[in-house]
View 1 (cartoon, helix red, strand yellow):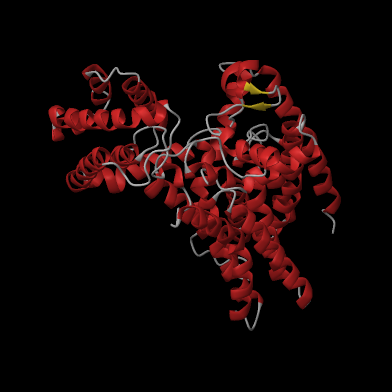
View 2 (tube, rainbow, N blue to C red; view 1 turned 90 degrees about the vertical axis):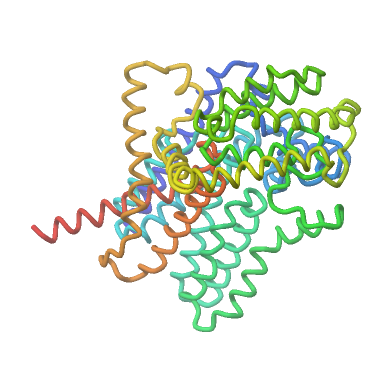
Length: 494
C-alpha cells in the first residue's frame, strides 16, 4: 500500500512526458511527413486506416485495392479503434486516436508496475522500471504513429496484468472476471497484431495454476481469446472460400508488387539476412520500371550486383540473371491488370509459378551449401539488429539533434539499457531459486517472450526495430528483476 501514491505520481508524470515528447517531436517533423498535421506518415499506415474510413463512409470493411485482398489486407483491430475515433469526430479522428494511444500508454504504466511487483517481488525496483518505461522516451516513440505499435505494447502489458490478477485474487467470481478480461484483451491483441498470438500460450498456463478444475476453464477462456480471430477468419472464408491465414499480403489477386515471386525471393534473400530497406531499394524500382516498359538488363544487373559475393560466386551471375529475366516476364503479364486497376487472377499465373520454383530451388541449395549461414549466422545477425540500438526512434532524436553531445550521451545510455534488457533474458530463464513462489509463472512469462524473439530471429527474419517494442516493457521488468536477484545474492553473502 505504501507505493500506491508514488506509482500514481509516476503515471501522472508519464502522461505529461508522453504528450511533451510526442508533440515536441511533431514540431520538428517536416509537414510533408505528417498526415493532416497530426500523425506521422509511414508506408503501412494507410492500409490500417482506409478500411475504417470505407466502413464509416460506405458500410463495407475494405481497402481501396482491387480484388478480394482489399477485404483482409490488414487484421481489423487497429482499424476498429480508428473507426471509433471517426464516430467521435471525423475531422479530428487522427488527433483523438493519438490522444487515446497516449492515455492507453499511461494506463499501461500502472499495469506494468503491478506486473513488476509480482515478478520482482520488490516494489521499489518495480517503480523504477515503470518510471523508466513511462517517463523517459525509451518506449513511447510510436504514440504519434498510426501503426499497431501505438497500442500493442500497452495491450500486452494489460493482458499480462489481468492474468496475474486472475492468479492472485482468491474470490472465485473475481478470478473468473479477471481471466475473462485477460481473454478479451488477448482476443483484441490477436486481431491487431496476429504474430503476438504467441503470447496466448500464457493463458492456459495461468489458468492451470489458478484453478483446481482447470480443463473446462481452458476451453471457456480459450474460446473467448480466439473468438475475434475466428470471426475474422470465418468472414474472410465466406468471401474467398478458403482460409487466407494471418498475413495475406501475398494473396493471389494482389495486383501490387507483393506477389508470389517477391515472397519467394524474400525467402531466398533472408538466408543471408538481407536488409529490408535494401531490398525495397532495388526491388521497387525493378518492379516499377518493368511495368513502365523498361525491362532492361541494367535493372537486373543492379540487383545481382548487390547480392553477397558468395551468392553470385556459388550460383553464377548468369543463372541469377536468368531468374530475374523470368521475373520481368511475369511482371509484364501483370502490367495490364495493374494499369487498368484490375485484380490479378485467383490462381497463380504460369510465368509466376516458374519464378517461384526457380527461387525455391535457389533457397533450397543455399540452405544445403551455406547451412551455417542460414541456420546460425543469419538468425544471430537478426538478433543483433533487434538488440543493439537505443530505441530512441523519434524523428528529433534520429535527425534533428543527431550528433549533439547531450543527445549522443543519452543515446549511449539508452543503447546500454536496451541491450541489457535482451541480454538479461538469457539469465532470467536460468533456474534461480530466490523467491521460489510463483517462479513457474514468472518463467512462463519470459519464456513466451523468448519464443517471440526466437520466431522473429529464425523464421520471420526480415524485421524492423518496432517489432520488438511490444515485449520491451516486460524485458525491462525482467532486467530489474535480475538486478534484484543479484543484489539479494550479494547482500546475503555479506
